Image 1: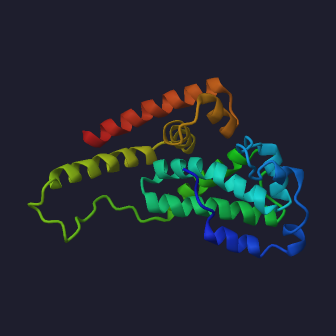
Image 2: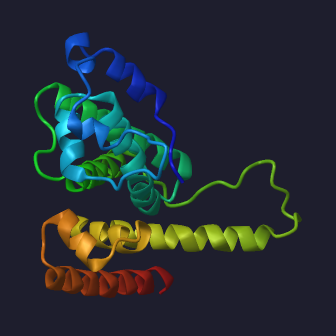
Image 3: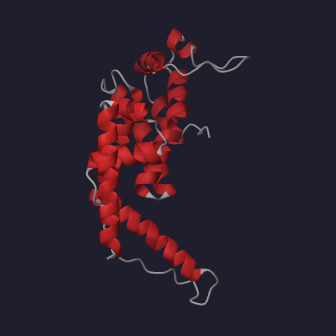
Length: 219
């Protein structure tokens, strides 16, 4: 899926001074420009250069390239599609704000975006009021078909989410990148700045801890 450019992001982009936004298209932006043939492969370093120049074409290419991965990451961590969409949009808003203020990623876009997404998810859990039980919707009839199945499914998801929240931040990120986003060991290592063997060990410990916490949930 290729996500559409978030409206709020466009509004923020429109506030950037014209002399920065409307300069001649740089070579970095041309890499992302559509052509009559197939679209060129995404070049992160060229995109970074375009981002620093606040080039709209490069910024849109960054959004379209990374949005699916960031959304899968946040959706896996939050288990809520609408909330994941909001957090993912906020990640890209933070990116533009950081660059516009002279901050932002210097060497890797993916690592910066994933770290920001992880921090926003952690902020959400710190600020949210966690309830141990949820009330059933008033419009669900007790004798409705599939009620027991829906309740059991929801409880299983809640048990997994509760178990995930008991893991360390590094363990949560590893599982989210590997199984939520679908990153390979090499991609995960590159994103978090560790080597592949360290990722394997961290993943092994994370899965073992998750199984242990899930066992605690059912005992």
